[in-house]
Image 1 (cartoon, one colour):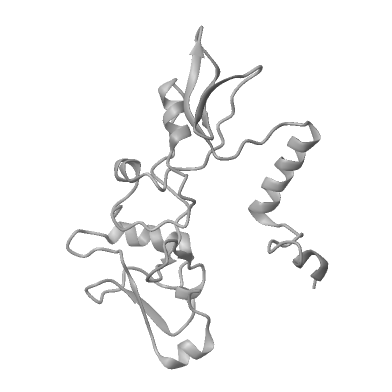
Image 2 (cartoon, rainbow, N blue to C red):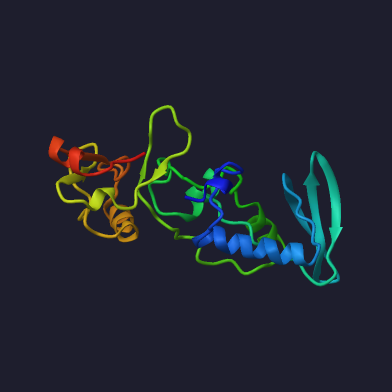
Length: 205
């Protein structure tokens, strides 16, 4: 009902969850007149005298050296769009992982940190969700609740269930990983339901 704002933006003025956290950080930057450089890629960290002193970045096609007065904070997401890192660190199957993460989450900051000796752990897990892959659309949709509604089952290509569909999304995907094998892959899965189920519940986008 916030119609005056709706004429200005498709994004609601009232932010919650992760969006609210990012907005709070952005306000803190604005309060301190800190610049925000978008479309800027981290190339490598600069290390001198045993300390990280700054970074080499690429901004709008130009490489620049940025010196840090106090320190460098790496807060750059995961590596879900980096197939080599997924194959190395994550449970199988990685060849059919579809991610709703942004295309720029390729693990650049993780690699830069490791190259200067940063601690590196807990990379064999993720925030696992089932997703819907819609033909013709590049980004899948998160499927948080749909599989858990009564009246459907999820099966693999062999028609076998991989876990109890009423489990929460995280536990369900972990269970699917546990029973995966090349002979009986857990991905992709197919939801099977009847017309009554389709009439009762929203499915996918």
